Picture 1 (cartoon, rainbow, N blue to C red):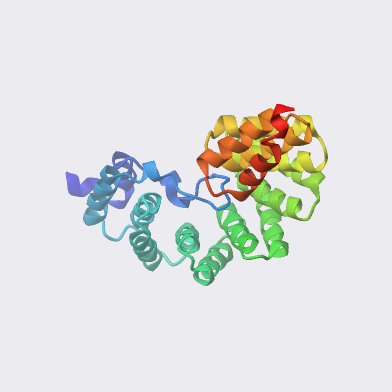
Picture 2: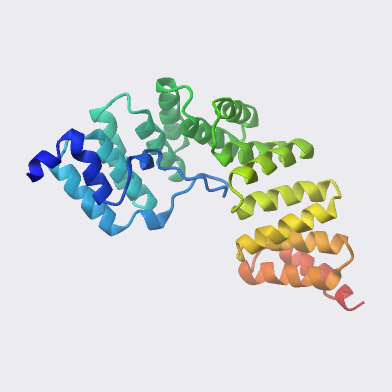
Length: 281
């Protein structure tokens, strides 16, 4: 009976038992922390043990390897993740999701050329695959090629992606180019798709600050630190906005909070030095 269950038409049931659905095949989450990241809690030992059984019983199922690779990636076992994605591709050379997943691991392990090659292959197989377009765009962005990055983000957006990273990362480029109005528009749309991300509020707050919109900036920095009490950059930026408003006591408190989280963060240290005496005036 068990052998019948592991046939391809029933592999989905076994994967569900393992605690991972087929929707995890893309493996990238929508975290807006600069690079696509994994949820480490999803790659539990129990899930991996169950997936080991699935693969042992059905060793030619490419999707099972792809999903176990996802679990390995989420638990930080990157070499094992690469092995599984490579096995998935060997079994199904047109598996565009597995190429994108392996690309993400290569990107996380500082192998940008291998990552680019896999993203290119994934996009060649499926030109509208938003996960690969956003991933490659992020690779271009972090490698200092904003033009090609924006092209990929635009293509992902044209494919009607619901992934907020496309807008967030494009907004970061606009912000670097001092196009703050467009950056704010992108950050706002990203937040409409995911209002729980501290970094997006912090980024939009910086563009409001650049436009001297203190109310908008302080509101966003407050939301950023509310969502992530350890976001020392947002605490520092809140301090900058308060300092600009002349509220030196609260500014000092914000800088101090940032330094308590990241003791060597120079902008927070500098802010404390500027406001230490003035907070008593």
